[in-house]
Length: 426
Length: 157
Image (cartoon, one colour):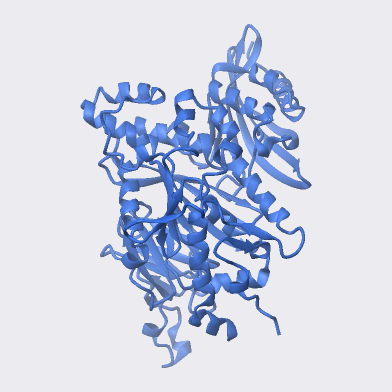
């Protein structure tokens, strides 16, 4: 019999045991207790633009299809034929009227219903097609963000997101009046536990240290904008594991401060846009192109991170896949979207000037945390001056580890709640 | 006389040698001022400016990339990964007296922190003849795994 780790003994309010990054049994518990029970981000609305659109992705380790049926309804279906278990779709995205298993030809509709099987006579009267659709998960959408879950009894998405919804709305102002669309992604793995990445999205403390070389490569004005660790920013616990880290308070609401001067690095873009748009619209577009001034960490797998979506997928206890999804204005000016792409390439992805250095730091956490026994990982930064807003949300300075504490609080709830314990015992 | 395949191969081999031996400043001088170093993601893309790439470097970004490699301020490049690359399967796609397009295969092995990793790519060079010899107008590195998850690549492919 395997002795399961006791999560409550591993995580305290202000510290965690280093084994949380490398205990394989704990990882298996997380996959059930966290990735099976919570709302997991699966797609952005623009990934499924019309009836028949689909993408394939994962919820934890489970391959799924996200599909829009001909009535426009969204479905999240396990990518597993009900006959012998083969995946029914291996395309990353596309448009289709049906999903046909390549093994024996069982055919499913966009909503997962089993439509037809070859040579049905072989089953006599025993095949009830209505009982064998692709397994359908619960799905919900908020402002273009599509989430799904195995947990049919979960609280509504609105409630799960709670105060994070306001921040999602603010983030989507990067559409500058147009809907936000995804514009491709950088996908990479790092040899480390998924929680190291979860923590990083709410870690401003590392920025001037890890990203020196990125800061060297931008102009002085941009360097000043990114010089935020002693600024007026903050980190706020939004409940249910979510948090927001505001690095650049002036860039919380991109529709405010429209009379602020155009940053020098965007002057050329502003001049070009001025040929087609009035001054106010030009400033709105330019501000949107520069991105939001905050990272919204949505527990457990997605973040609205300044100017892109960060999505993590645990592959193994010491292996994590990360996608940095570029976003832009759907219908907005091409020249502005191209500037967004260049900015994304500059920092993000496996060849950017930022991500490889982050990746190196995470890699080192994974390897270093193997040293010794019973040595804590500290999560106490900013705890001394942490305070409560009227809403009851905890907040502290921009470099505080309040967001990590928020995530681990929910992590502990997930791993110690009764249902999780029952499932683990089975 | 048109640029010959041998001229192109000699030039491409020099570029590979400079990159593997860390002579990045010399590498910068192999490009035209308008030259681009591109590592695309989408294998079907043709308009790289309108598409998300891994790298889309003009002269300024190439200079920044070299500063990053030599500056000792990027933890993923302290020191940079060591690389060994081999080119082969050269084919001249177009050539005249002033410019040519050559395609070849590149097999690259990377070593960093005890991990050996491999990247295969089809590389297309758009070369132009100048008074100072051949220069790169465009180098497009189409990784075999461009749409898969990569690992951090803090060096020049």
